[in-house]
Image (cartoon, rainbow, N blue to C red):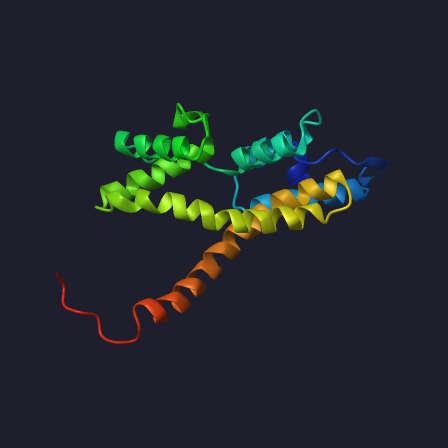
Length: 202
């Protein structure tokens, strides 16, 4: 695990108050930042450069919490190296248009929309062109989850607590969603597919 000295060298933690040539005092704000850095690196698996981007977004004080959430989400989201399929880009643009979102003229301007276009590009490359049909129902389902996320964040008492909950909740939430989605698949498949043998291939 990287040491505090490493994080200090990388500029991810502010320097403590020197109490002797070889010792420094770190207050609660240092501990908060250390927890955040470790969550980003250890839970989120972000590179040091990406951690730095997230911290820069967090430290921008002149933005609303709504805008800061967007900036943090962008910094957390890592663009894929997948070559984007032009048809997948059209699918993303169509999805945004249907949802009344007007800021998706170029999916490469946003890490989040780039991720979506990359996922649809991979789906097309393996013969699942119709995966795009899941976008609208996914969004409707995820709005319920987003409301739960925002309710969780809103319980925090200070702006710094809200921002920390926003970042850590997103990273941990992504992992939890993967696990709970698999549980949901198991429960729904029993009702939809049942336990009988798979039918003959078409």
